[in-house]
Image 1 (cartoon, chains in turn blue, orange):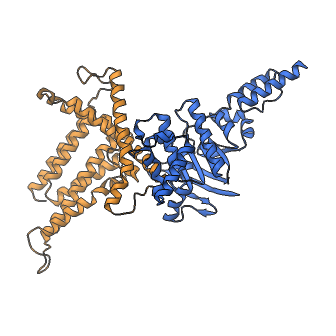
Image 2 (image 1 turned 180 degrees about the horizontal axis):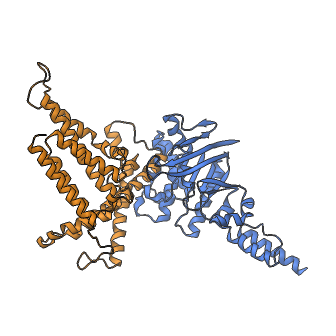
Image 3 (image 1 turned 90 degrees about the horizontal axis):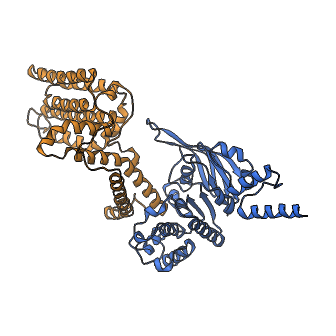
Length: 286
Length: 265
């Protein structure tokens, strides 16, 4: 069942000026309830432009976005409501923190939804828990915390609105590997308990292979591949042609297959690679 | 949209106007303004409109872009015109009216003057990159150095301010989008509510501006920047034949306006 649908989406930036440029074009996608989707593509391929259409921050030049079958741009009210149902965490979200305390900042979204004090309080604590923000930090000023902590606070600020669809634009950019993993684990736990659909824009093929069941590859403002990770990564040559790569594990598996060590190169994570090598070793020993 | 702000914007191009030395263009703008304020007669205004139109055509700047820049000034233009319309003494248009023929005459001329003034300024910024503009300004103001005016520092600050306008606009846009995504509402409510709604934009904007200024200072220092003393430039500005022609035409314009004024045309 598709919750979110994009139909022939097109967006032109600065239309009618010398700086006119096409952001995205001909995008038709259907996103189902509870899916875990990763958007891939190199810089400037239109991923960020696309996700800003999903909560009506940008209005399409032509085409439409449907949430539960209704056009999200049909009225001012629907454009406001969709922002509560579709939560968008921007790139480098730590730069939007402004309140005096972490608590207040996470409460900004729920308060804008005109919820009661008690409900806001429940949501702040719940969101802090999901985003991995320590309870002890809630009364501190967000500006004096580290980059990774700020990022988690900003993510909590969006989760506090309990979006049915959570979109994160490069949530791990500039974080160390353990920080990135933690953020993905947090997103996973939010999804598991809320049943939300999760869409993440990422550059990391490893993360794409590990945490998602559907990958959508963007190139030059339009969708060029859409499928399960194993389908996408089996088209390694096409990925390389548009400036992307396959996970390191897949790369190694392919090299090993070329030398006749492995018989199978459908490997996308480190665990699968280790298992495949052990299997091959076992066969050789027999 | 914020992106529509045209202040300090530059439209790259390769027209004779784009190629003129920035110093020439600055002097021409001064001459143009002088001519504009000496113009008293309709003939002079006609000439100025013609000159402006030719400059726009030569530099491929469309009236649409000029109008976009004029938009924020419309209120000022309208107010000036209205004041002139109602507060000029003379023969009333009709018995008992406060509007006089002289008032209409002055109101229209005033509107033209302000519009032409802004158009001229926009022609300069649209066709000259901020870098070239500040370089030109620094060279023109060089004599003031003798009077201990920190010309280099002033123009450096100016070029940085110009340089960061687009960056700040982009940043503001981004923060606004992010807060909107969290349900912030900038469009409804009374004046106080709206002012309060700006806080979630202003605080992050200030924080990042200070961070940016700090980073910029460190980057400049680590590249041994220590003021304008003994500093040379990568591109030397040079006057060409066209620059002299252009300056001559500028002087001619001022002269022509004065001649027209003398004969009352």
